[in-house]
Image 1 (cartoon, each protein chain N blue to C red):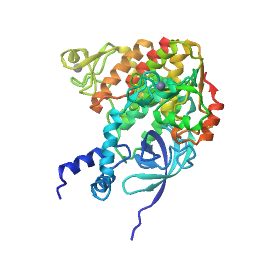
Image 2 (cartoon, protein in one colour; image 1 turned 90 degrees about the vertical axis):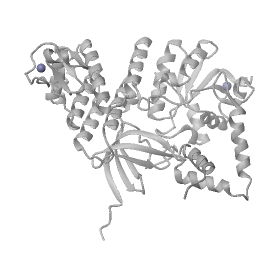
Image 3 (cartoon, protein in one colour; image 1 turned 120 degrees about the horizontal axis):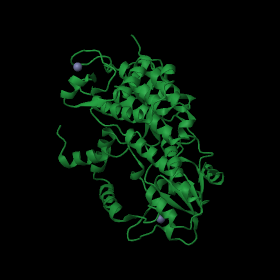
Image 4 (cartoon, rainbow over the protein chains, first blue to last red; image 1 turned 90 degrees about the horizontal axis):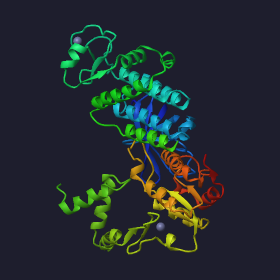
Length: 258
Length: 201
Ligand SMILES: [Zn+2]
Ligand SMILES: [Zn+2]
């Protein structure tokens, strides 16, 4: 009789945690082997717990899981990387929260995608370094869309199929890409996008991270891209995200405090 | 089998409690239904008095007895009013009070910041804390949020907001392992953490 493996070892990034039962924590993790799953860390809220210890969001962990009746149970956790900078810098922590929330809302339980696991782990590592957080996050969004099959068309007009010329264009979130000025003008819901912003999006879409990271985005382009990606991602998700609002507030308060 | 409405209502209510699933909710409900104990009337009286009999302290937002503006800690003249310990929940006040080693006042935030869950500064009693500090008379603030991502986020935000006031700001982090909840820490650990609090900056 085939016996299902009762215990398995996975590499995981912790997306979020919530209190569960008396002193347990319910972890939502993204694993390399099984995709997203939820697991109970027994006794994790007790300071002396050994099993669930410091398994906090954004951590890179190695977990020993046992399959319970409905959820996985963490039988052992080994923390490989906690990204301590994220607990010392509120803006970086907010960006990391956004990265994690986006992945959580775009994925279903146990849908395996090792590329997505690597992207998540690399992105959190970049945020914990001194890289430009907005750049890191825009690059992440484009790679995430690629890996999930939502790659936006940035080379030719989605209506007349003409190649995009170096001038200001339109972006249609409904159609998922650029429209030439002729078509864009008549398309309801299409938003203008500057030539410069489009240039950076195309650069991020076709480049490896190290190459993309050499770009230095003008402030106006950062604002434009953040708004555009927020609209596009919210449209695809059909619901709003929590962390962008938090991030905006934290950035504003940090400026006021300076 | 169709469950009679009064029973289903109680099962549904229990199911909304944290950590209680539908199975436990049913078990609790049918336990209460048994006639041989007087738990049900006792429980319903306690529940009725829970809201009516309690109030929130106007100064520190801790729970107090109805009819009082201040909680016993704020009302006491035995406490050091120049020292304020900021905690997430009333349960953390109870844990710290059990140590018997803290003589200052408290400020209960009502939770911790969580970017992912969308809990922002306006959802907590942070503006009230800043206002309270601006009132003067305070020398030190001990941030005693949980050693977790949310507790860290809250501590950093408080630091940002309080720094301009030029008060001594410390954090009760040492000795409390990451991930554990304050309310589960034993008394000695908490005492050590209070004594060994570190300046934030
Ligand atoms: Zn066109
Ligand atoms: Zn009080």
